Length: 457
Image (tube, rainbow, N blue to C red; front, top):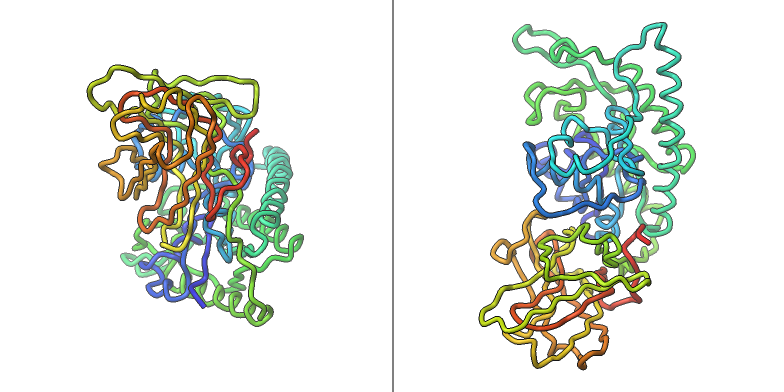
């Protein structure tokens, strides 16, 4: 049996269990194939938010930028579908500590203090926060706090129900596990030689007991309604570690916490194996289009390197087309468009299939290398240029039975062995008049019928 494939949607209390600094031998048992940082369930199940992918800037780390992009794209769904994990571990820290923020007609996790430093944040209409106040309420505010709590929980429960429905429909072999970690307010102060309070050290007024009570209600809702398993630490309490590599915080625990998590999770895995000796059916293909805005109905949203020579043609159907026309050039100009970055599993065993319709006005006028489409693999999602890629392919018109002025469906299957992210898109080195539509990327070794991206019309 190979290693257990795990997806994590949660805080560092969950994700750090698959980090060798905290659990040195975790790779002997587990392969962490998806790791989504601090995303509210309300944001997770809200509608994707189109954005211009070119030039995402801001005075934050690349990790923070990618986190914000994942909040807009809701790309964790694609990551789950591609990697087909055995287990998905959830914790609800982001819901309890941050809550959600209305943005346009959707939601993101309410980490506004960070996201507002990113330039594209300013392009959205930012609405109210739906979250739990962290401080202890006064008698005058107790009723207001209760109303906010009820409002949040109504929206949160609906989001959880949608998520479980998604998992059962698309990933029926993947089991949900709830991590029941809780905030701690205690750490060992080495200078004083005694147990101290984190709130005093960080000068916070947080009512952690109340937040832990809300967190327990969330866990109980999912565990009891859907009969999922959980990593329950019982009455065992853990100190925070002031020497934790992420700093002193209410969920940055001493090392024993992560080792206990490992052992409890392994017990869940072993119990499941004992209960089910039959071979599990694997999902061999993911019949979901992984390309955002493959219809071009949202204009330039989700596409990068857009140049004026590329023109969108609205045809009144579910799939608009995009064309490019260039004549009389003597040198290559490398006209190109690139899709959203899709995180993949480049293990040399997983196949991916690209398909698209193409129409060429005159094949003889497509010169230079006769390429009509490009594929690039990167180690980081922000990269675009070929020089930054770890692998690339150019599909030429001679690979397909193309006739002048006729739409032709082209398919190409490949099995990547390097790179973490893939981008695809129309490409012309020099001259030609070419039109593309119905672009699709999916997991599997064959093309299925074209459809828009997941949760897109």
